[in-house]
Length: 180
Ligand SMILES: [Fe+2]
Image (cartoon, rainbow, N blue to C red; front, side, top):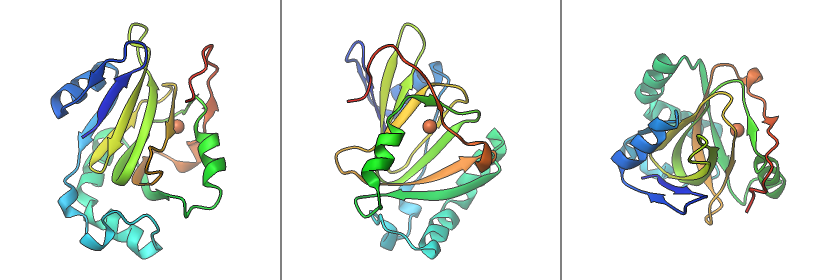
């Protein structure tokens, strides 16, 4: 289950209901997929062949299609990052800049962990959403955020897009230094 840490207050939000309600107030979609549907040979596997990526997409076909229909997403793929990824350090550096997109950023974690650092409303400020396998999140279009890995430095996620060409990061200038 996802855990939220509010940067200004150090408040920690845990538990499916509390996390969902916190994120809903911030306009962030949060759902959960049943990880027992993941084929056992793909559990905690971070280097994936094209065939294995297709297997993950097949295992969650109904969840993906349901989410896509509700939210207007048209295409999806799998991203896998780990120390086996060439240029992981460079990629992470690139990720760790606050930015926005012209469409939602949707990730369903199927292995490992990831954190989204998201700009909440004025009262809340930035908060971290720590995600594990089964967590599904959609950061709204135009909402400043960045993504990074956790201590295990590995993640597999389904990404959903309206159009992949439109999914470009636009830098967002923040006064304070946010990166850890
Ligand atoms: Fe992003």
